[in-house]
Image 1 (cartoon, rainbow, N blue to C red):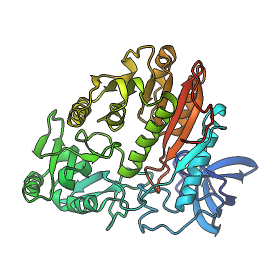
Image 2: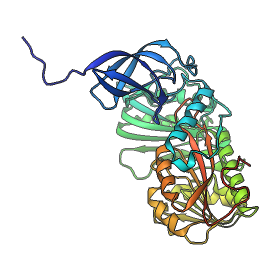
Image 3: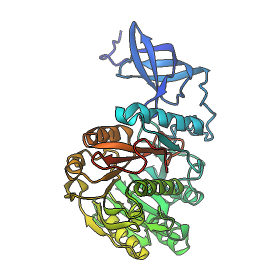
Image 4: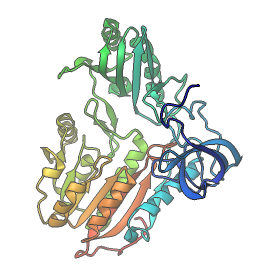
Length: 447
């Protein structure tokens, strides 16, 4: 008789549950009685208020639940518009109505931010477009046996999901996505393809092949695609090369916050929703004017990227310093300023190591998901009159705002759904140094 090898069986229970809320990662949270112990269970594809039957895995903490049956749907639950929503990891909230998504964003922000921010009016901006809005996407590729599998990652795995249609991609990007499997035929290994809009709205490709080998037909296909206008340009990194193979013009473009075209660094970061990103920039500028007046005075921008906010600030600042760590982004930023006739000092370096001068009027920061913890002491020491903090992660924003609370008071809080059908949200938090007064006082409704 064979015996089990080790404790390889995972203990599971089937239990009824009610989804109480959505966690920061987007999963639903239920509290269940598991053999006399109350346990928090995280549940994918859940909606607040769902009454469900769960298969619960108790081997992890918190536990993980799988919906076996929806006994009574919550008020925000809808049928996903995409047939692939349950497998594809790109749109984890497509089973929620847009109003339900906005309510979930508001509740998560309120629950996570420090106590002083809970009384500040939260203005939540619904997305302008919910389908066909993404102007850039990162796709994952696995290739073997002469065939390439291309798609967004399957939820909770590293495997790409092939779909016949992606309804959230801009139509020009969707056409480019459908070309990639044939373009990559004959390759071996795995890689990533970043597709964005380039010159004249034609797609550009940044292909990074991490393991294995690309086929010669890929390079020939890209060169032909540039000649016939299918692609504006492409960059290909294969293996350990320090310089990519380039054809055409691989520069991505987006609509800047000032309403004019904004060049980006190839492969660099930009928001995926142009219209909502412009709304975010407009609100940042409006609050800065509300507190500081027509002239913004002396301004520093940290994590400036290619200058989405810089091209707005440069029109209203007495002096402006923009700090960015990526060399190609700095190059794009300088060109964006020059093409608009704007002046700013662009510093190529880490924001955390930049000496923030005293007597600044405004500090703008838009850090990555990890937040700006290493900047907090410098900001508190320099004490600019106003800080505008743009964040894509609620917990790290809460951590940093808690530190800044030693010398700053909340002024404004706004949320922007730049990624509809996902748990991702951009937040603008505006703070004023306690020694400064401003027109209208604390907790004023938006200007």
